[in-house]
Length: 295
Ligand SMILES: Nc1nc2c(ncn2[C@@H]2O[C@H](COP(=O)(O)OP(=O)(O)OP(=O)(O)O)[C@@H](O)[C@H]2O)c(=O)[nH]1
Image (cartoon, rainbow, N blue to C red; front, side, top):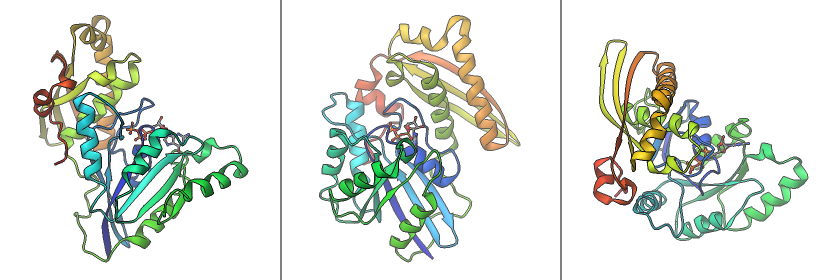
């Protein structure tokens, strides 16, 4: 039996959450076309005849950001690259940027193995394009292995799991076999609500909203969830609520449907929207809302 901790790291939007979700085969981390959507460290556990891989999904690493929220995210991400069994550094095929280089620089003093995952290979038209790129990227550091994948098409994911197991130590199961995700149901619900909100809103708004779970009760096959969407200004509140509550209703329905699908239970979801001024730049408010630097 083998087991170990694997960290997935990379700049925003390269597909870290999508890879995690594709590997675990269940939606554990929110996916959005907007960058910087992962705020918490999320664990997913992959169980297999060979053993267990415990994934730690990191928030995107950012440079030169002033806001405290981003600082907290950076700390959480940095904390999870040391003392793990393997770091998976994810980049996007055909799009290596300064931000990727910055993440690579952060990995310089990591003593353990680091592997390179080149994601979104489905966007590359030909092998002729991909092969030289793999060689070029692969030479940027002494990687444990370099593997091209596509999270959305599922390409090469079995090979990736084989490569990971090849590097995990012998060890006991770290989590019970029925445990797929390392976070609680409330967090799952708040992430889903935030995802539905982010999908529908195209303003800058998504960065200034967060969701807290006020109560989460289970009665047999029924779950009653009360949640609050926190925004920074009155104007944002009216956007979130929408005309005659239409947007809030849409978000609530979409989140409820998906929660029912995931849990197999009936879900009653009540949503409120409240204002907490400048929450994303206020450390105390951040802690009240459950953000944590991972220390
Ligand atoms: N074409 C293609 N798109 C992908 C692939 N993997 C992810 N994407 C898309 O890339 C976008 C970002 O994916 P995420 O999984 O949210 O990226 P992330 O790295 O976790 O982003 P942050 O949470 O912002 O750090 C989404 O629109 C995904 O659908 C892939 O293999 N191919």
